[in-house]
Amino acid sequence: MWSSAAKWCEREDPSLGLLRFRFWFALLWMSYDCADLLFRGTGDILWISSANGLPLMVLQAALIGGQLCIAMGISAPLACLACFALRLAEAQFYFGLNDFYYYCVVMIPLAFAGEKRAWTRDFLVVQLTWIYFATATLKLNPEWLSGGHLYVRQNYLAAIQHWPYPAWYQRQFLSLPGAALLARFGVAAEFLLATLLLTRRAPRVATVLALAVHGFAALALNVWFFGASMALGVIFLI
Amino acid sequence: MLERIIPVFPRFRNYTIPMPALSRSPLVVLVLALVLAGPQLAGFATQFYRGFVPFRTTPTRVTLSWDMFATHIERCGVNWSPPLPGPLFELRQKSRALEWQSVADTREHYDRIAAWACATFHQPNRALLTCFLPLGKEESHVVECR
Image 1: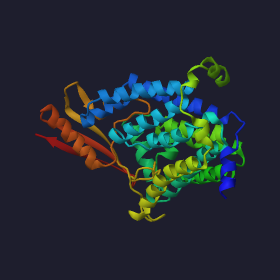
Image 2: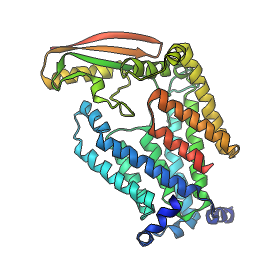
Image 3: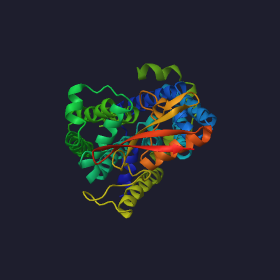
Image 4: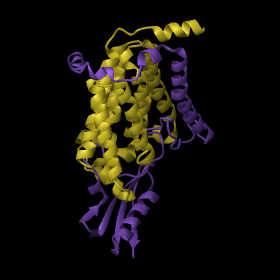
């Protein structure tokens, strides 16, 4: 068993998928941190807790530097580990967002991406599979399946944030029954994505499904970066 | 694009930790697997320990359980009248149009934000909260600040 494990650890991954994923993942999150810093996205939210924003700005600047190194391939393994630590600090001391924890669990294997070992890719695919499976399982609850969760998010966005939903969409999907339909499609799509990732079958179907799920989250729920970084995983790693 | 960028900086790539040796060691890979899987499995198990039953109960926030969009939420708009110094008419002004929003997950939390803002700015006023609830209802209430 140990010898087969050793062989698996030695196996090379000749494709460029891992490096491409690392490049785009770093670029995406660098743009997140640049926009966050420039437009005081998180900084203004901190107003509620009256926390000091300066350490956060330092964290964000360091993350931008780290991600630039990763994208350019400059001491990328070290930069990956530094970015892991910085994002973990951001999650622990400021906002414990799932987005930030996802970033952390991806950055650890990415530190080894330059070696192009097959196990790194396997780790990341299993990681993605688990996230889709776990989140779909936890969505099997009355509030999500009844459409209540989406009802709240969408109606808040429409009424308070003046989100530009088309009129037809508002008529069909801002009601509880309409939101329930979307919610059930969503959970089915996530289970299907987990299955396709696990079996590594039908990469095109998985890509379309990931783009549909995360495209919906961006356009209808105003969640852009987390979904995009998960979709990158499906596109480059499966 | 990537292939074109990486060779531009070959000399920087030498200043790095010895990943080739580490990446071939089954022990290192095993430790990494445990470090990654352990907290996530523990997070997921904690959801069940805290009472999550599929199709019957709603999960709570647990780090690394991947509970996005699965937990209970309520969302409110908060309007202060008269406006707070700034002038700050509504909580929405502290949000960006895309991605970054000043939101909480319960009406009680929004009540605390409304009252906190009144107290911080030492200004008697009232806050009107318009809340959306997962039962498919919208309700409004007022937080008086004196």
